[in-house]
Length: 297
Image (cartoon, rainbow, N blue to C red):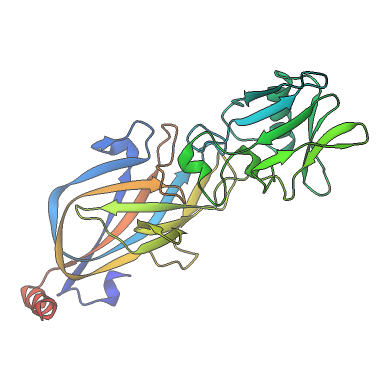
């Protein structure tokens, strides 16, 4: 909203640019930071997120996402037919293409048994895992319980396009084989949740995670570019990113945090990011009194 569109005798609009490089405090991975204003901003009636500038550096495959490892069981081809269980991986943290992800998984499997091959079909996008000598079973569930309990994104196999958590190699054309039922997923998340405290939590967004829980935040930040590019959210997507208060409030500082769709702080890998907040203040005592009395009713 522009200052000329409102009564300047009653309201004042100011812009506050917040940048991790100039913050008073921040977390080690730079997902959360605080900026204290020189003087507490009194009689604030409205906050709006004007812009966000975020480098998309978070790794799609990482320890935090629990998608670097899985469990492999193999049965001996001859008596006594013992079954041995292995932990496969971890594959290196980072961002992959479909082919490079298959290569990383194949390398991890071949450290256990050299007869494995992992390929992605360039037409269907489905991943196939083969072993030319040994029967195998794969449990793709993450080793992190909270991630394994999810309905989706529950482990490395989900990103490889498998929708069954446990798959068993079937014998076909002289090899044991399993094939995914969905395409490989190596793209970064399409959005982040921005949380804001100043000092109370400003909740204008409720993001459903499952039927029993929500992630609360101030705004949803849309990410349009590729990994390692700066993302600009300037409000052009028309998503509402503001809060109108029922009564005037005082803002001593702004504390912001980025989370992923599950409410986990984003690992910014110590990269800096910034945002702009538009603040509307009451500058007229009569207006302040009228609004306060309305709220008290």
